[in-house]
Image (cartoon, rainbow, N blue to C red; front, side):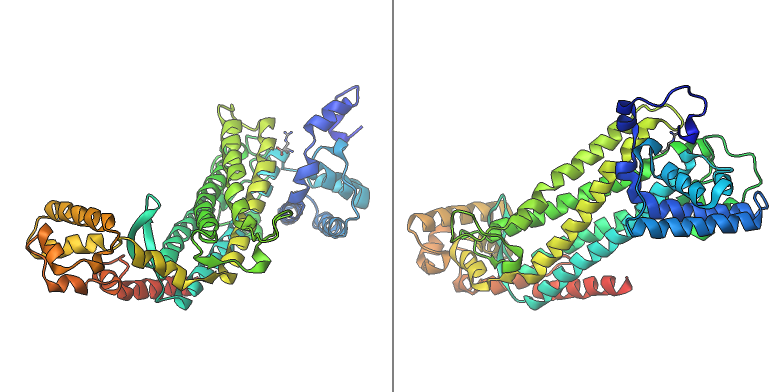
Length: 457
Ligand code: ARG
């Protein structure tokens, strides 16, 4: 009979044990649980709530248990429910009765809240590094391909020429907002809940600030009932992860499109592509497809935890044990996806000639010609309609706008002069010389700014 069942006459039904245990997944909190317990034991010793020597024995025992777990020597037991009870039982086996003093002035309710916050703080810091890693590869590719021109799209239709670097730096911006979102999420995660007890606080003269300092928290929670029942830091992480995965899925989608024969804009590195079991000619972008596909489960975890927490009465409810699996999977999926995306981008080869073809082919300079008429005095709407007719005429004749004669141009508007032929892809790019525009000068500035952001950390 486990020591928390002393008021019961019977063992738990096997099915109940299986249904309620969490050790099969919350073992992942062992490092956080032990760190939290060590800080708590030291505080108890320092405050004279237990003897200093007793605290010493407990800390030594916990350190030994961490070692055992790391070496795979500790067999976790489902009958002991969770990581907290498994470690505590092992501590008592190792150091005897005195191990039973560790849980003084503490409840599993504030303990699990602490462990989850410690875990989330780590996960945020890993995510921030992962985001920086991907941002770095985007910067490198933007710089290495600084003069490469590609078609920009709206509605996935050829729209206007842009610099490839401009397109890549668009993702840098998205990831920068993601970075800031996680930084912001860290502020609210970085709160130390221990000392809340089961829900109402504890009856001992504890030092919460000491525990917070030992564990690297910036502050302690303000309300014990809130502290044991709040999981919005998990929800915020899941939401921020969902947004990041949404961004990564767009990048992934473009990698899928661009690596197709129809686009041919990139060649994936062999190490980041897979073959087909039946079609020998194929090089599949499975990594990008999975990055796109895994977005679904991350969204799913967000909805799951929101639903679990919805309408729960204060304070702790066992429902909250359901916060863990989805959270762990969110962290794993997000970190892996950031890493494979960085690897994919770092190793892929851009094909400037293939990107150039659609730029030279279609009527991608039509907006520039409309702008030309505006500068000659036409209203933009009139200019738009004139160029629309011009494009329709040229496309019927299967000619490019460059191939039309001056006489043909003038049939559409007397404002056209010889200088219309000096509209080129280069002039089109250079003309978009506004803050945030694709003019090479502006993109160079954006690149320099992105690098400064990276250097600042
Ligand atoms: N395994 C539990 C969880 O993850 C730990 C807290 C248990 N508290 C309790 N009062 N049963 O939520």
